[in-house]
Image (tube, rainbow, N blue to C red; front, top):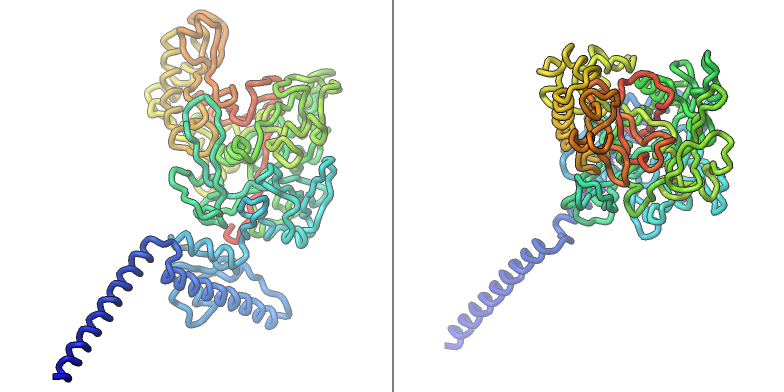
Length: 595
């Protein structure tokens, strides 16, 4: 009897233990589901991190081995292929990792793993400064012989640091307090200042209006689409400026000032000064207080921008580095950051002088107030980039920001409406054939789709379109122009981050005020135009919105020195791509292991 009772007691105890275990397992499952700190996932991540560290070390050992076998000489960029080609026996990662130019690159779709790889291979480090996390300025691949880090003190005095020291120093930037990172490259006397724009995602709460608002910015980690602070990106857009072809970037370096040339005081045959003129024989410089480079075609602007990585150019190397003419999305990346809590709306650069048979526009200036415009050379109210008023012309309101994005010269961007217009060819570019951007150069351009009627061969384009756009003054022609431009503008909605459709609510079209008049302008509505003598669409902060002219397929941005409040980081217009004394440009520098 006692034995039976003990057996029953044992069975009851076992049942109780099993029940407790089941409850614990179920509870653990719920906790694992609800808790972001999932120990199973954490263990997988730790294993992946350890494996990547080991693979990275083995790749370095492989390169060192090859060096020792070849008297210390080995081109690491020749290392391309599967991981298992260089680390024998490691095949489990061949589907999501590869070796490109000696660097370990993640090709899978797991954003967390992408972030881990970017961090461990040293492509970029995320830093925390002033309580804000973002990608530190990417100095990798930039030659130490030509590159210096710029540090500005409270009196706007510049000092420089070697990149090896600055890479471990965060005192030269603090984006939480509108202090953006600066460097310069200087090769063969061709000096160029650059400002770092870290990779970010953005959200505009009320897009497609003319009421400016602060743009929400979340900085991202490495080349991933993961917020640096770990927060959700729901409702946010990864800014497209950080995708270059198929390469994801940790950030971009943008020219601090409008481009100038290696002969900024060069005069043309009439005695006018355009800072260089229409040639590709000069080198690009990016400096304050010099005449900007104008009277150069849009195509030649791209060529000389790309030449900055040549042996004579400012950067001096094209190894894992690329320079090119700024695109609309790259312009937008600067504009959106300055329209956030991390920047300031810049004052207009009013420096413009036609006196004495010359034509002079200088970089890095402000006026007596935010919307000053049209100051002749020598005006006492002109304020240099490093003065109390001068710094207000930057995108941070201090000396660390980007200058000349409001006023100065209008800037051609490498952006065009793909409507087949013969005027696309006026850019005189080696990158364009038959009025189309060549496939191998498409990553260097923002290409916009026009409305169906405006396309080459469409009802109102081709030879008839030339007549439609360039002559005639009937009200019916105005109506057609308006319809064509509206259809093209509507297609802008599909383009994100370029400071066009998202920061405006309507378009302008190019036509006459009324039938029979001799006055042309950018117009919004024929009835109102007739009454008011001309009216244009606007973007945020009252900036001009003047894009969509079928015969003017190239974009220009920022506004001119004389436009005052109509200039700005959202200001836009269009032209034919030919050389013009009012139009300059700005280069962009990107670096990375897969360029």
